[in-house]
Structures are given as structure tokens and as C-alpha cells.
Image 1 (tube, rainbow, N blue to C red):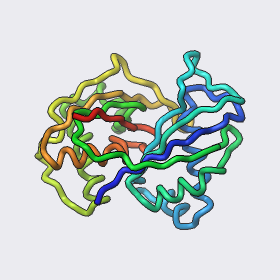
Image 2 (cartoon, rainbow, N blue to C red; image 1 turned 90 degrees about the vertical axis):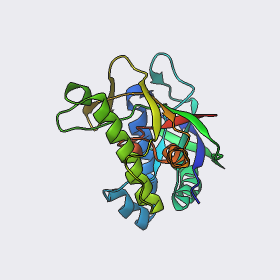
Image 3 (tube, helix red, strand yellow; image 1 turned 45 degrees about the horizontal axis):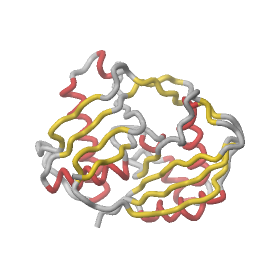
Length: 231
């Protein structure tokens, strides 16, 4: 049975962190925790869907700098019970030179009918030519988004789904211009979207899955984290 686990973490900042570097700083913390487990260290290096996603620090700082000496929160979601257990046990005392985790609280996201999903962190769709809008249509963007979720579902649940099934009745873009994000010294361009979920049971199951895996790519770097509004 599919379950989405949500871990809420309180962290103490050891250095100031600019908003553009927050997701990378959290990713470094999570990556460090994997080194404590040989199986997860190997998993981290494999080219596969990682089954987790996380958001950024809050409360949001309006001047785009998170301050040393203050306490902030963020969430990690996963559909993998073993990963959830690892995060709950190991992250509670984990730290880097930038931040230290103080507390971890776990819950299971209730499974109810979802009206829509909406971006909290930008979603990234990588094409060889760069940002998708320069060379691809909205229809191609939508197809890649839905195909990505169907592939995640097939890998995680072991069930194949008809690629022609309606998952979303409407996809709207919430940003007027691309959102620039930093990753390993490279600037990528992403988007924030709202996805109105179809009423069929498969669409609802995949929308629930998306809460724990993220949408599109680079979810283990914090991109594609979505929240939900129930019907």
C-alpha cells in the first residue's frame, strides 16, 4: 500500500545562507547522512529515482538571506519506509558547516481525493538544448511531466499504467518568467506549476505519489516539491 511519509525538521543555522543556495545546503546535509549507511551510500550514487523530495527553509526571509543563529524548518517527503526510518533516526543529530538538525517529527500524509497539486520549489525539466520554452511546446512539457510520474509509479509500485490515461485536467504556470536556480555552479531554469488532478482513481494515486517523490527531475536536490489541496 502506497504511503507518503513526511518528516518535519527544525534546524539551527551555523552560517548565513543565501536563498539561492538553500536547497543545495539541505541536499548536502541529506547526502552526508547517507554516508552513515553503506547500502544508502551506494543507493545515493545510482542513477535511479530516489523516492524522496524536500522543500526549502521557512519562515521565508524577505531579504533572501537566512541568518546564522536562527532556527528554521523544512520538510522531507518519501514513499520509502526504509528511507523514512533512516531520516528519522540519523538526521536528528546530523550537521554540516552550514546547519544542524535539532528535531525530526514524522507523520503519514493522509490519503484523500486531491483537487490540485502546486509547486513549492521550482520543477526542472532538462533538455539538451537548455530551457524547454526556447525549443519545445507546452504539450511536450506536459507529456514529459506525466511520463515522468508514470515511470516513477511503475518503478516504485511495479505496476504499468496506460500512458494515454488522463492525469491532469489542466496545467497552469504560476511564474511569468523562468525561475533561476543554482546547481553545482550552473544556473538552471525552472517553473512553478499548478496541476488540477483528474477524478479517476489512477490519477489520484499518482497525484498522491507525487507528494512523496516530487514532479519532474532533480527531486533529490529539492526541486519539484509540491503541496496539495484536497477536494
